[in-house]
Length: 188
Image (cartoon, rainbow, N blue to C red; front, side, top):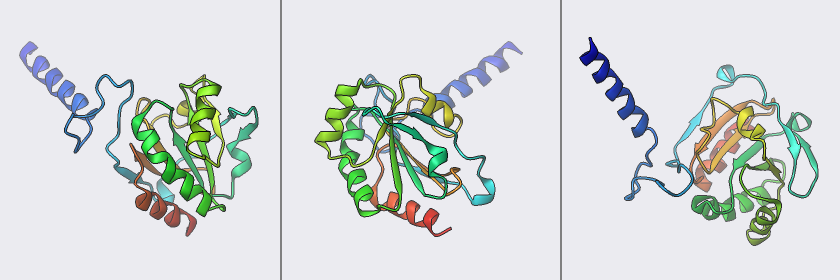
């Protein structure tokens, strides 16, 4: 019986470790980098399979209040990021471009790690045209518990017009895929 439990435990550990690697990267992921990189994979949920709308409010790095409930009726893209995250930096120009070309879609960054000065410098460097919540208490992560891995940076989530999670990209968002996900949700 002990042997069976040991084998089952080893298999469970191997499965959980395998889930934390980055597919297609020669270095096997982001070990030691302070974040868990996603592999760019995406997941979508049919309208009938989505849960309740996300409840989230907070304050931006500029000191402005944001409440996702006020954005009901709009498609919303939420991006979890922080300034020292290499894939966050790599995707920032694409996110800024998509936000600029799609003014009917709301964009919101959520940053759980940086202080205001660091985050605002990042936003200036990459000409980010949308606000980011200063998520010091991890309420943004908690609001999406079960849908967004706590350590995956960056992660991009598309919310439907009812504020429900319609799609998620783990890791650096491919701009073509993100545009397609936005289009699909906007067409609903």
